[in-house]
Length: 60
Image (tube, rainbow, N blue to C red; front, side):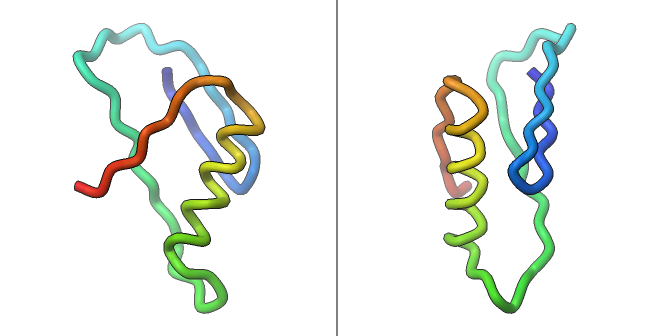
């Protein structure tokens, strides 16, 4: 799947490529009013509202 997310909007489409593993990369602007955990919580909450697909987060 190709996933694009801006705010609480998620756009997903099937990929024609086959991969051994999947990775999501988060690009975000630093905000003085939000910490990284708050930003990630918003991403996870939006993901859960928009899809039943499982998301596992790793720091690596």
